[in-house]
Length: 407
Image (cartoon, rainbow, N blue to C red; front, side, top):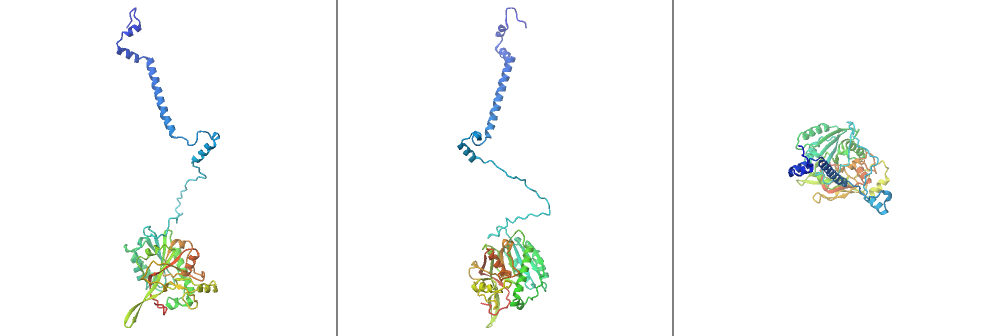
């Protein structure tokens, strides 16, 4: 619309309604430009404020001064607060996928008094020679053990035998392992002949002449069995002879509770005799290989050649040692302990690490002893403890080898 003569734009604008004036002002390019600049300034300020807050979350510790301008106190504060990690010669982990490389860690294998709760594995070892007559009773007692059978491994060495020991052993193992209520974790049968010539009769086995060769051969048999059967996860080794005829079912738990490096029970036998028309049970003392050393024994050993095996209990070698077989009583405190210098092999419980450390059964004269007595001497030489329980009795067959070997 054209403005008439005598009217100006300002005059025309003043005559516009207020709403039209506001709309006209808003649509003014200058006003729009000013609003845009203000909006941009506000947005930039807000973004800078949030970024500043984020920066404040990641601050450097220590003084704000550079190191070359720090005072002595500031330098001390900087050093005391510094925990900057330093890595020297850093290597990435190595992953080995070769199937023919085996990794074994023995760090977690312990022998503790609480073996059942800690699920510690026990290895029961038994050397066998002409033992077919004893195997049925042996397995009857073994299956009665209350230590969890899934934690027990059995291993046997059959050698220089002339009877059906191997066949009888195989049948007994089949009978036991096919019964899931009494089966053991694993079983192993080792065959090894050592060319032993002496017979298994009492006269031959316990003759003075046979003692040296016999004990050396038995030491070799035990070592072969131990080296073959001991595995990295075994915590305890339990040596148990085949001709035992009685022992407590909880014997493993009883023995490990003592937490001793080497521990043996007392070994007796039953002998029934007819006295005045009545059968009398005579409790005989069997194992004279568990003893405490004496001054006479040490003096005698000092006179012997280093290769001579000192056989205990024979008049040719008077030692005057103190025999555990003549101590104690199964009716008294079964947990009473005594230190020993020699032990027999009927029943021994050993911490597995003792064997891993190289303490075995010498098949030669070690301090003039061999096999189990030499084992005890070797263990004590290495600083381990060897103990016996004079009131804890296990029962052996009656060999009738000695008159007077009775109470």
